[in-house]
Image 1 (cartoon, rainbow, N blue to C red):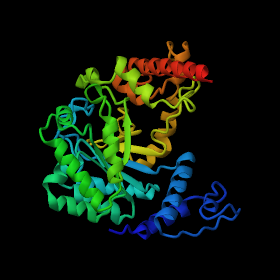
Image 2: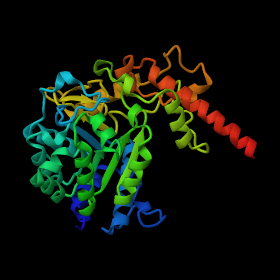
Image 3: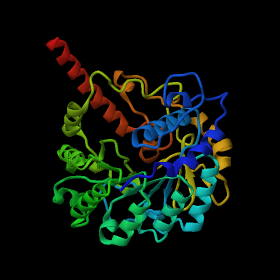
Image 4: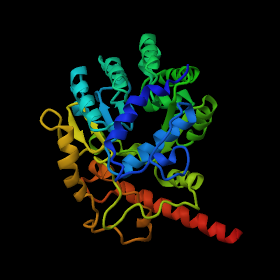
Length: 391
């Protein structure tokens, strides 16, 4: 199946007209290092992806809104033990007319990436209709799914791949069905997930396999990565998933010796994660380069960031972007966190307001991230000592 790169040409031209040459000179990097702002695009895989990545990076760096997350619903056909989605919003869902208005306004603002997510977005009755409209607007379609309905519904699968999404992201916890199904609490879910991933690979759909690492699948991520490599899928794993007090999922997170062992296996001693957290201001582009729409149409700075900036029923994306986000960004400082910046391990903290909203509250100290930073720092020191002995 040949990817039609020229399909996105109209969307790209829209962004070129938005960017003033006085502010940005991006297009000189596409073909050579000349000082000219002229550019030539060849719609083969390498050149187009390079162009698009450069464009996204520069737009993001300069504060352009490039991405929208549409949480079509929070209901799901799985019941994952670590899920942080609010259970009290399962009655809400975004229909086609609502999605169309959001997509239209987002497109006018210069967005060209739209992620359909949830909950499980494929169980929304308007899922394909919304996905198709995204591609008709010449926007890049991303889908985050657990793949269960794509296994059962062949028509749905075919409709989706015929839209040729920019990426389908699927969570796979383990190559062991017993472990995966224990996490999803749905028997047979691992088999269905793997089969859909194989089918997507067959049709050459760009796929990312994510593997959140929690207590019961600690030893599985390497095997999942091997599977991802075998089918040509991207791979991403992380131990810092969102803990939600309301969902009582704190006991599922990786901690203690398992967390230590994970960092021993994955730490890059030459590129440690230092200075993520600044006393004056920490780096968070929430609301600047992306916005997330909840099923009740609340507008959040990013996916999982439980901090409403407004509601689409009463507030436009333009107003959020131009008036509300700048004021919100001024609040994103941790200089008032009394217990922070007192320890050596603090420089390894990946302080993120998303975590604290679910942990202790907006811009509060996060016990989860404190433990993570302590463990990471201890592992870093041991690796450093080992390197010194070997040297």
